[in-house]
Image (cartoon, rainbow, N blue to C red; front, side, top):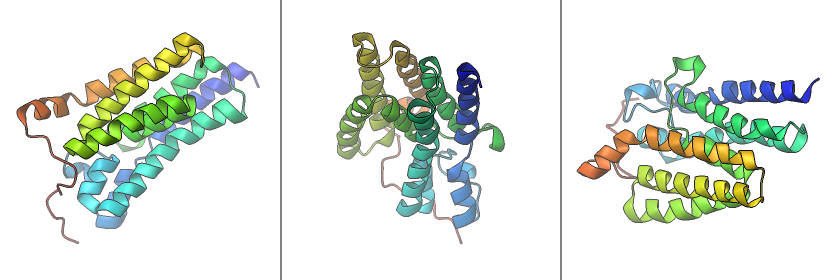
Length: 210
């Protein structure tokens, strides 16, 4: 099969796999609710953590990372797909999480999927993102702020590596696309941070009856 066609199939598969809303599945299995009706309305790991507890939030985080990392890693390291498609597989995974076709295009912010894709494409950029994001989250207890800081650092690190020849030049497409997506999806969080009304890490959503 033509390698470019395989690349296109990986992009399509990345979107479909990214569209699996593990947070929604966990909410329905654990609490028998539609998690989109609670908290921030997101299907991402942060809302799962606040609504269903730490263990299930961690499970959602891991699954959201795997659903992006696996297709990107397979394309990059196993099937020898053309380089041009690699950043688009990662972006497709993020798009699937944010606008999942299986659940009415209502998903999360794609941070876990984005970081996992970034780390596969450029491990050093992924490491830089987590090193910068973690202390910000720890010091401020704002997941959103840490996410934006990590995304910004990771994006510009992979862009810098691309321009310097340490990874393919087109990987900068993922950096730019992922970063702009992150900022756009966090516009509400930015407004709440300015107003001082953003929810901090550890603050629980209203209790849901079993």
